[in-house]
Image (cartoon, rainbow, N blue to C red; front, side, top):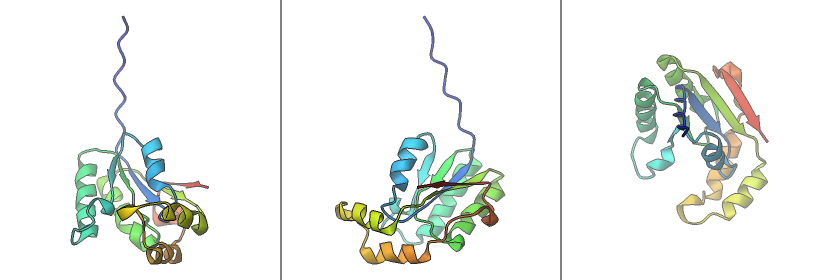
Length: 147
């Protein structure tokens, strides 16, 4: 009888998802990063100081050697910079995964959502207005662009 080998532990890293609401970030994370701990400000919709809370959670997870994925829109370098800094401070690699999906496609997908999952159109278009594709110049070790 053969025994299944235990899965190799996933090395600590920080993955920062970048993309508009409806671009498929959460779906991609579920399919491609099943061993990562997902952190998202959406997990605390009514919490005050969600950004600070997210930073505390990510810091603690990275300190424990956990592979983390931050699943937010993260549209601008200014919004991504604190996450890159957390990874650098923890001494772990940081990569961006950018879902480069046209805003019209994101709107169509968003229109099919119901309840709290549907993002108000003003939020979708505001994110589109701030969207700057991530680059290695921001401090990422790797940038993956998915179309």
